[in-house]
Length: 571
Image (cartoon, rainbow, N blue to C red; front, side, top):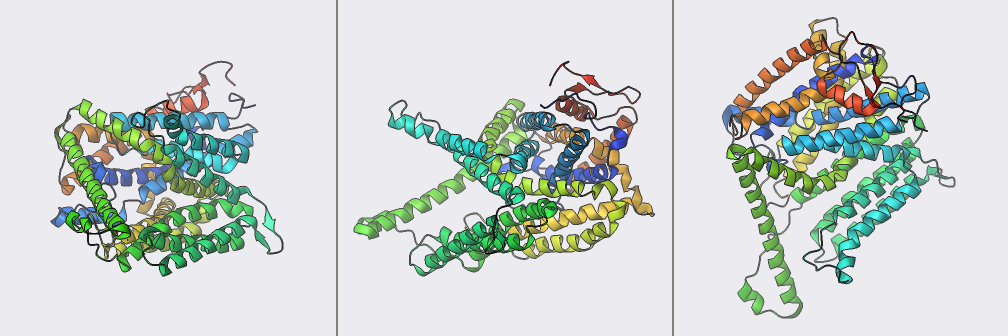
């Protein structure tokens, strides 16, 4: 039974906190603010397209620095910290001999509610909802039972096919049938996390080959994919996507199988190895396919005219029509994207609050079902963060300073260097280039480099924290980090009021203006965090989150005793 109010499993007291986590959290929050401010001045529909090509001079330089020294490095740090928080909850539950499932689920659902409200009512760049989905997937990875996961996959597949079945049965017309195809993606995600859970917890092995069964599965699938890719390259007129994707996928899985055979043991090391593997696998695919698109560009496709098609017959006519349809579909997508950017820009700069909210609600409804895809990356970071705590490293950072020095010394130059190498290829996407501009390749290098860079930043912060020099003053960020949720949401509130048309209307401000705004906001937030926590135990949102998580009323004033149950008798 999950008895929430049993002694020993209550909110973490202030003197039980790990100060290093608060410092790193505060530092990460500064990077998040630097990264996010651009998207209070630029359509989020343009996210992932690189540096704005219209920028020049100092504005371009600021965007370049933000892109290659900040972007992607700080949400990964926050993801690490989220995994560390999960491990702290789990460790305290183990020590108290109590289940942590009830509090953890309430914590997830509260985070999902915060994220949904944040995205709909304030700003579309929310990551809290993504974290809530990732947190649920982490639970499936670590504790999911195969029979329940299989049932979930079956239900999702059935839900995905339900509209087609209803149309065939004559219950609804094809136009009236809802699009529930997102359930197929959820089913795929559940299958993926089931496989990941097998890697993490499975003990099956093939004794004759002296390797884990999961390693053999990866090797077999990887080799088959490589063979399939080779066949695709030899056959004429095969689709370009599988010709490029299969060899990269096969290479990734084959390498994963080889590494699994060598590094699946000991079991205590699996979380960090799996976490790194999950992150690298996704962006290895992106980088590999991007490299092929760049170095093996497609032949210029000549789209026949309608008059030319009319003179053709048989398969030639069908092939020509397919080319026309493909080109038309590509042009349609580009036009729709441009229209979406223009619409968002217009609403952000001069729209009313109700127009903003309607646009954000629509965007949330479109993107929420696909969050399980992003969770494949988040869970990897969560596992890595959890390992840092469960291994005892974060509880005694001073004893592990040599590790943190190495992370800073190697992680930062390697991680940032990979992004800078990509910048030599492309810094922004060219519309309609289909990867030939090299931007996907460059972005893949940047994303791969974000992992060592984020670990390097964490290592640097820990080394500074334990320094006997002026660098130890970095601990001033601890209160700022303790109120991370409150400060994160406040950054969005202030940014929305200051930049959007329904507020003060500074949308489209220069990058210099944006950095000055960030500096002022961060200074005020750090000072306010010190002021608030000198009088209260928690930030306002942290208090609410704890109240929901532990189903108690936590004491707010510093001189108050421990919290009391919010609802007596809850079990």
